[in-house]
Each structure stands twice: as structure tokens, then as C-alpha cells.
Image: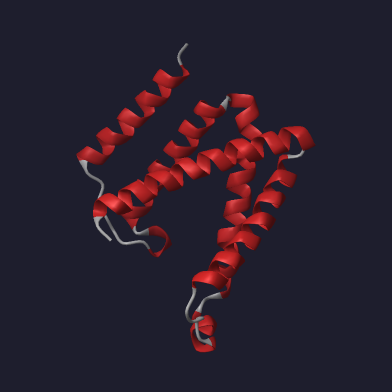
Length: 149
């Protein structure tokens, strides 16, 4: 796939995450329990992922491959997903949609820059540059512009 198509898919994925956060934040408000919205999101996500995986996989990973996966990789991603998504659902009604998504996105980007710089989480090392720092400053300035009335 070319970079333009991949970039478009990444942008669409981000929009989808914003839509699901808004929908499930509403669910959390109605239920008065954001964690139940997170539970619904994860349960329905599992069903949809199983359907898509079943329809799209021509072959399944071998048992030897599955056994090579460290145990923590099966669960820690789900833990961070539940915590992150639940925090979105909890804070959207209190901070507002655009503010929360802006802050959430900045948290993702700043962590990604740090994780890439230090090679955390087994990621490829990408050194911190002045351009990246300037990008973070612009991102934070953008959040202030969104927030200022």
C-alpha cells in the first residue's frame, strides 16, 4: 500500500475512534457508569473482531506461533484499552468532546514521541528532533486555541 492510502486509512481510523468515544460516552452518561460503556464497547468489539477475523483470514496462526507470544501480550493491551477508553467516557461529559479528544490525542502523540525516542515497548528508535518538539508545541497551542472561548 502506498503512503497516501495508509495515511488516509489512519485518518479514518482516528475519526472512527472519535465517533465511538462520543457514542460510548453518551452510553456511559445514560447508564451513569462509564465502565459499563467500556464493557459494552469491548464485548461488541470482540464480536465484530471475531466476525471480521473469521471472514478475512485464509489461515490461522500455528500453535507454535501462538505459544511464542509472551503471556503479558495477550492481556496488557486489553487492560490499557479498558482504562484509556473508560477515561475517555468519563471525561468527555465533563470536559467536552473537542477538549477531551484534543487532550487524548496530545497524550497519545507525546507518549508516542517519547516511546519512539527511547525505544520503549519494543518500538523502533526514532530520535527526538527539533521538528518533533515544534510539532508538540504547536499541538499544545492548538489545544489552547480550541479551549479558549
